[in-house]
Image (cartoon, rainbow, N blue to C red; front, top):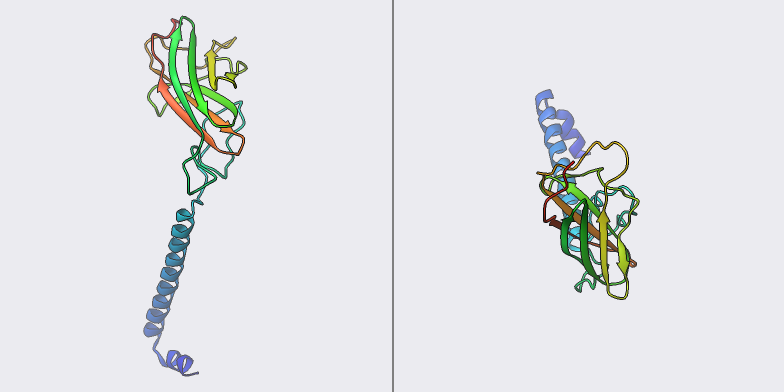
Length: 186
């Protein structure tokens, strides 16, 4: 009861100062606890999921693992995806690559602009990547979609590819590269 008696004996201004100080101490204690839990979780490899790659028709990577992440914290992942080359061949953009690991699927997107650019609607998304499981290779032809397009190819534009491999254990790996050659004229 001594603490309560002490508080009641304070003047109004002193009570306000004590209340603000108490609120500040509680806030700091909460903040320290929160930061400590983030540190513990991040050192354990647990964290907020990163945004999945920009896709419109493929199954996104599981939110529990980041692209390139591993289910095992202590060892190097035994999976990878590598784009070997990307180029314009006449009216078609072609990407070829390889993977390592027990792959489930590969998905590639064509982007315009620098590496912060956006996927464009120029290509027909019903044409999937072709995969050779025995050779562990993939290729995808980006052909013009039918109908009116919001994003026609700019013959002077810069284009790049981003490919993702999704693996059976739930992990994902990606790679990106510039598309070589000259885009087709409109």
